[in-house]
Image (cartoon, rainbow, N blue to C red; front, side):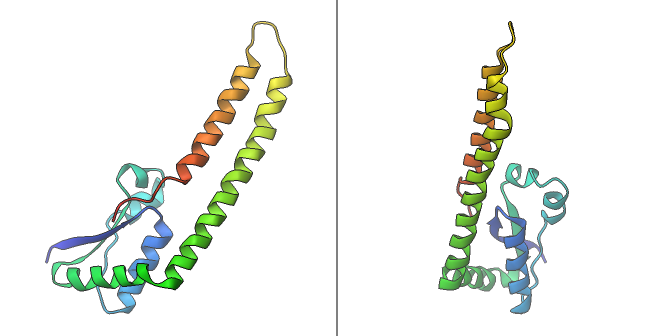
Length: 140
């Protein structure tokens, strides 16, 4: 029987937990992108997230189950806590990278070498990586 995609996840952990919850509820989930995303984790964004699929005859019930779980207060509380933690890690990363790379490089003054420009580029890349973490997850 053909597999039908019922959800996509931006995070491997969340996809595996959803698969486990479906398995515990009697469904037969498959994560077709699991190995690609675990080997080259950056590719999970390029492929549009990690797909969660089930056999066609289970698709409607499994989709309802995942929707119900995502609507629960417990799921929203855990998701909100994860987002707060990721934001705190992102802010700390920006501050650490700025102190580690930016300010010492900006103080180095050598004729003909634009060290301040290098420092600004490194800080901008760090901020861009942090902001990328705040983008919404892949659509379901």
